Length: 340
Image (cartoon, rainbow, N blue to C red; front, side):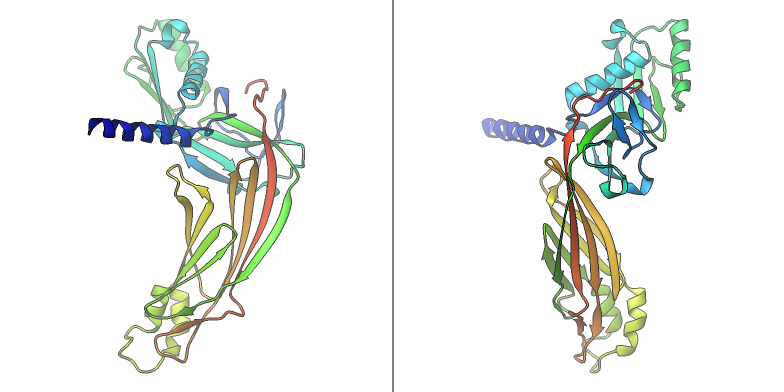
């Protein structure tokens, strides 16, 4: 029994390690934490960021990093950067503990909005923490303590000043690392598909598949508003339809099979749409050495049927279009610039 449990535990650890590989590849640790990183800006190696970067609307949270996913060497590198900034030398490194809360990777969402060309470098991703906890398990003389306090003021971070009990410093934008990529030539393709299906009171979900996605449209609330007393009534309630369509939205679920969570499950996007509407959105993923951005257009229209308790899909109107932009990228392994 113990042998079996040991094998299972080792298998789990190996799986977690394998899944975590690559998360921190190519990230450059900042010399000091920054208030902001201009994601989407051109990167000129040896010089730094060129431009203000992309808009907040074009930045997305790629993933939140769990504690067990943090690579040991990566954490050590961040720790050394923090210690170096505070002028805590080698004699303090073994007497200082540093913890980071809510590490998050931020990513450029849509490359078509950053106005960069093939061959240029872009600041594509960054890692930030909500807060950093630093505790020095060693006496700090008055001069060093004053220097530590000044450093915290320079960073414009909220903190206390008792380093022996532990100092938590936090800021709205506490960036720790960044990653740079070179852009290749973008290729564009487009696919479309008619959405088909017949709605019934015991089957209020219509599904369709295209590219790497499965989409489902759940109109349970809408049909139950149109026919609140079905199957007792003997006539279809056309008068309710317009009112109910404005009041009750259709729940859409998009399952993205080309992108998985760390546990191997596909990424799922959920939102609501109004009946007889056109809906647009995009999903961007980094797949191996490519950035794949899919632009969706959904046309969806249900109508009342002459049959009681039924809604029918207008198949002449309802369709799904996916326009795909694929941009090859190459990681810049050692970005360098003064102050970075």
